[in-house]
Amino acid sequence: GVLQAEAVAVADRTWLKLKQFSLLSVRENAHGERTGCLHRLLGQSLRAHMDSHAAAHTLGVCVWALEQHWAFDPADTTTWTAATAVLGHVQAVGRHTHALLRGAAEADECEGAGAGPEHELVAALQLRVSALLTQGALCMCFALSRFDQAQQALEAARAIQQSLLPPGGVACGGGACSLQRGRALTLDTAGKVARYSGKLTEAEALLREALQLWRDSGDEGGAAATLHELGVVHLRRAEWESATALLKQSLAMKRERRPCGTTNRIGNCIGKAAASSGGGGVGTARHHSRFREEAATT
Image (cartoon, rainbow, N blue to C red; front, side, top):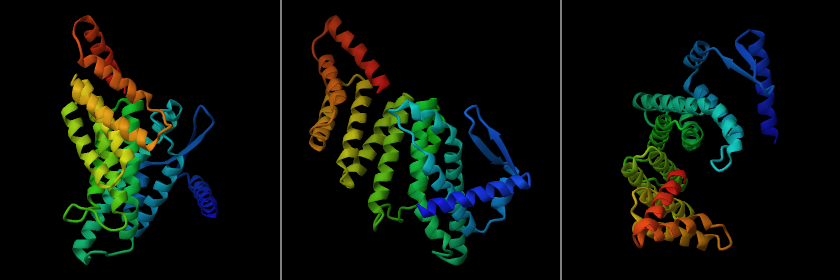
């Protein structure tokens, strides 16, 4: 709309002015796309000379720009390359959000709670930044197998979400449901990353916490997805009966929500679990092997 056109015009003017004074290095990649970057020291100097409100406004612009370009889909590998190209920016907005939160906390100590209009702006950005960090972590895990970096991004997301909680630890007010669901999604993603890293005990603990938040917020779709992920964790442990129960519960919830939807994947998992839990001999061993392969790629 008009706001987006205005933002693009401002970005173009800024681009040209920075190039005019040789403050911006412009590069062109193999696809003919141009990218520009400031020298790191110059960027740090600019941020150091901003007041808190200007820093919060700049962060908001960066978050908006990232949201316009972020289109990562774990199920669509054609989106992976573009997403990995901006992962550094996703991590950067996480760091700058933490810096602003520290600055806001220091201002509260000096001037009292609610000092400065930047507080409301930063609070509005926190959920959006934590969502970007959560998606970024999923991209690091799926596209790059960088599990340690993914875990760090998720810890940053959880710290940002935690700062939105009141002293009692229970969210309330108009944004409580969004915060609850955001926390649940981050925990669910952390559980996936832990499973891919082979940390099954940690994965289950994170997923159980996510499941409780989904249920507390009344989000059956999120709960069904986390139950499926819990089922896969139990498959990895060769705990066939509990895996079957979790996957059946997930499948029932998904069928109730989407009577005509596709639930074959979970159904196949349940069938394999049932086959693996019954009987012995070569057939059972073969099912165990196939099931571990399924769990490893889910």
